Image 1 (cartoon, rainbow, N blue to C red):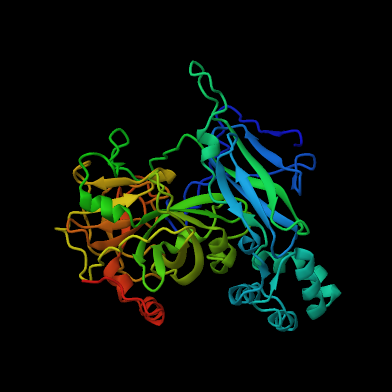
Image 2 (spheres, rainbow, N blue to C red):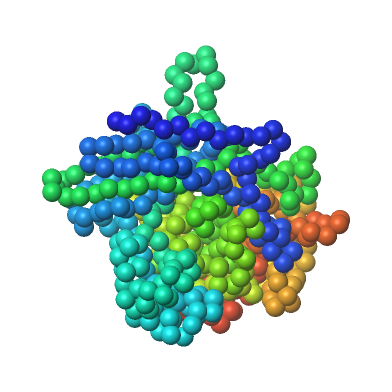
Length: 486
């Protein structure tokens, strides 16, 4: 095995390099939640994974909750090999085969975005001929593009085209075991949780098969969890607790099974949201916020409409329904963005289980509007924490305040949301709001105002408004999905 490469990162006193906070998206201070730190390896640190030549990535610096690693194929055959990831004790973290690696593709969405970027009609028409064609390697893809639009145009538009095409890099699920299994075995010594290791190796079932990979970048999410307390009524008495506290009802446990943590990236930052499963037949659908589909303000690109829900955002997303640290893994991948609506601030994703997990029973969605008498609970992942529940039993102010409230942007309908005083935090975006009977009545999407003083009101989208949205209704109908509605 090669010498272990240690990656040193300096944390300056008073500078939290591990967390990047969001832009105040049209006044929304929960628009894009907490983000991880992106690392690009130097020339001497790049990891090559070849036959009979395993390697290891070592993160050393700030304590991290998990790592997500970008793996790029250099040369891969269509069969006969597996890429294996393990922790320091040999526990299996994740395996990949030929079918797991994405391809470089110009999707319909990619071409629409290029048109919005102002690319010429001539170039756009040439790219149309490559629509939905799949390429394993970047060189292969760029050669095909050059054949359609010419050498001069490929030089001019290369970066723009690659930006909107899907990537052939694979992004691992959040790798948590590497942080939770400290190398120090002496029980009298405090374990060093600032070090995380991922071991890579190749296994071949065909002696003639070829496979080579390179790792040049990864994302680390800081530990401990940082609460910013943007949207809590009393910072000294936080109004949420573990969903699995002894005094939480079995009904809420069942409803909590439908709630997932979304680990999202724009390949420069990693951030999180919450979401809720609303259908399981004939496909599994998850409802979350529109604003979860774009990166923090620290991104170099401006936040424009066509940046939201890039195909790569879906490709790289992991949805974990067991982020409550269940012993059973319940991880899902985003396969398609079915519908997104900026005015309502919703997105519906088609998701698929990574293993054999049976999806949870979806909640019943109430058709009636929210009322002041509704006793509400929110199940969410504040700051990426395991599942929490905010209820009146924990904080007396957790209640509905206004049954009608304007949307999050100026073009939203005037009565599309309601306000509440249940505590939330970054990464609570997209969390379901249930009433006392277990009906899904809202989708949390925004915290306190940025005014001085703040309004101390959290906001949620009314489910009756979502159900009656024409585009939402049409897409659900086209899929043959019957939502549980009452």
